[in-house]
Image 1 (cartoon, rainbow, N blue to C red):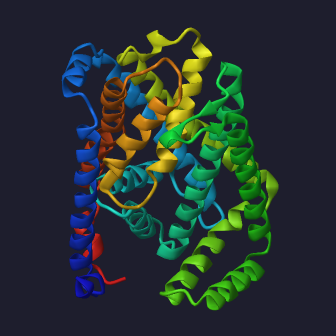
Image 2 (cartoon, one colour; image 1 turned 30 degrees about the vertical axis):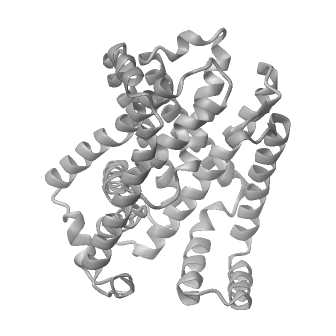
Length: 358
């Protein structure tokens, strides 16, 4: 097995990662279905308004548009790139993330955009890494704001895994993480060379394995932060991140109406609060680069978030059917659209990307 992991053949590594990711998904989906009441799930699916899948898909495509727009401004210090190219590459990258493990779609995005724009792959990858940090910061802000409003809903604590956690403490924790990360990004962006030197010295002191690869990753990431050197740029990119995740939360909200989940709430703002928190926590929790498309992990995290948050007393079976349908809306249309783009724009196949020596 170690020979496979260390193999210099990209196709061997890709196949190994795919099989490993597939096994992770199978195990997690097994846990997901084992903890459901199948009869109740079937009854729930019979009552779903499937027509609402259409506006939910539209909402997600708008989210992807804003993601491409934000990426345009992250790349602007390197080159002006047409939105059409960026949208296509984002869709293909998301398709790859849905089909392949370890978030390999990020490498696919950097490869295709590099070919289309003549920007180095490492420079493109640096902006994608920064994009992921912006996503994490935005979601942490959403969770923090949501946690602030949880006590106003009459909820003094949340009890995941039987552990009683004060909602006020959660609010302070996530808001603090947001501002701490925000300040750290600006400091690093303003002092890239000093920050890189400091990080490299830390890795040397810790005697970390694969030190050269870690140092290369740090350098690439810090280079990508150049677009965040000015506070107004950071604020602008964070503002653009709001519709990225706002329209994705729209998918959760529309599909909740399809499952009639909104009917169990006494007021609309509790429903919106649940949608924002579920969107944020499920995406943060399922961002671990393992299974293709986060399949299995997304379903478990999103379902348990809905069950933990004491809004509406939603059963595990209803929540399970709902999050599985949401995930299908998030990945299936992009897989289809990404394949269409590959066919119509004469892009190299994804397998061809990994057969090239980098």
